[in-house]
Amino acid sequence: MLRSLWLLFTQAVTVGLAVLFTLTVLRPEWLPTKLREPAVPARVEAPSRPTGQPVPPVSDDASILSYAGAANRAIPSVVNVLTNQNDAEGQTGNPLFDDPLFRRFFGDEIPRQPQSSLGSGVIIGDGLVVTNHHVVEDSTDIEVLFPDSRKIGAVLVGSDPETDLAVLRLQTEEPVPAIELADVDKARIGDVVLAIGNPFGVGQTVTMGIISALGRSQLGINTFENFIQTDAAINPGNSGGALIDTQGRLLGINTAIYSRSGGSLGIGFAIPASTVSHVTTQLLQSGRVSRGFIGVEPQDITPELADALNLPSEKGAVITALVRGGPAERSGVRVGDVLVAIGDEAVLNIAQMLDIVARQAPGSEVRFHFLREGRELAVDIRIAERPDPPRLPRN
Image (cartoon, rainbow, N blue to C red):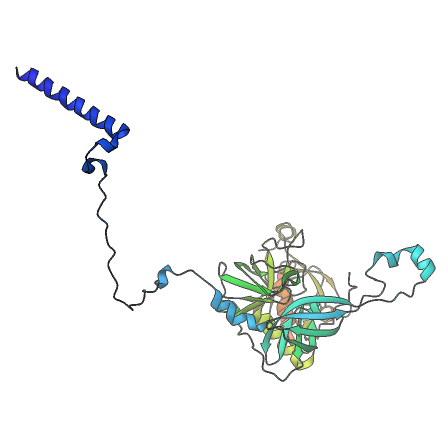
């Protein structure tokens, strides 16, 4: 009996739900109002803020990381260097002028037009601008363009081809913003750096990267090399521009890139600020850089050379040639001698040797330590002044 009643109840409920579903879909207007309107959830009101109360600022922890402060401190001190350069002898800049048929009719006396060159520079003192030697080489007229579009004439104080640095003096009495020099000895691989310059002449540009390496040498770019390597984008026109740290201080002068296409491949080189300071001081004092010279041609020690000469290590530099009548030859140095120390400083390779010799004062007498046929040998050499490098023709 109970079972029959239960079955009757369930069947009635099923039929009722089916009828309700059918009416909801096909004839919702037949249903009572309460069944036709879905329930709306209660609206949750946001807590009110008293009138006039300011919106709280975003916390520093949530702010965007920016180097705008460093860039803004350095940008006023980075300028564009505009020059006019005479064509080198025998170069016309137009292949038509070099055509023999053209010369047959017009002769060899072809007027040569000055070439415009554009690079970057950095103001490091009162009216002093540092740039690259190759930016102002053979220049007949130099102008400096400031970020605020002012143009001021400049004269060349002096340049040093062996470090590719030059110093200009602005022809103005107006105060100009000078950049602060960084302590390069505190720089580390991985530090964030910014490069500022005028790539391809598009206008002042800031790029970001890190220090990829320190003390890069033997690249064949300059005679004396101690480069900061960075992956901050450096392109043609950046030459002479600034490489700065995150405080806006000058770490180096951008000077070269490694590239197969002419554009940035993430391998750029800057001359350290310490070298800039040393070279600038000498150029201001005498218009040239005086360096020590002993008249030798050295070679780095390879593992094969160390085995052949039975050397205890690969540190040092092998003397492969001597300048006839030079300081080293007069002091008894021979080809095959291995230079291991100069004074109290150990010689590890050619780059270090050139740097140590260059720092010696011309006219001073310095003790050099060699290995000759397995024996230690000390030789006193009177330092001469390094002659100016030969002038190479421009391409």
